[in-house]
View 1 (cartoon, rainbow, N blue to C red):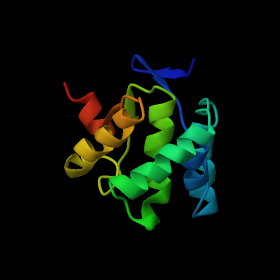
View 2: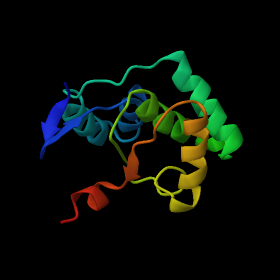
View 3: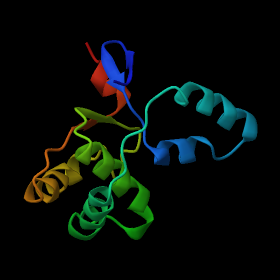
View 4: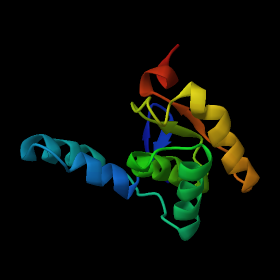
Length: 122
């Protein structure tokens, strides 16, 4: 079970840790201190396969490979929500229908993809 914040179990992926650890050393250390206690999502080959399909069929640009993997890991791990501030390739309403279609063709349901602010409204 993940750590709970305001009634939600929180999980992260290794990609999040890698991104949080980049940049200014002091800022990265502070980010990693917050993230360290959270459990990691399982990485399975089907996640990489789904990410490839998202890049090809949505389509997402090669530069969005990590974004596709973020989505795929949330999907294959059965997350209810995928929180992100990335509105270019992840929390993008224009891409949502295509993301859902790609995942459903492979037997997966897509979590609600939104920004943290959208989840906490009301």
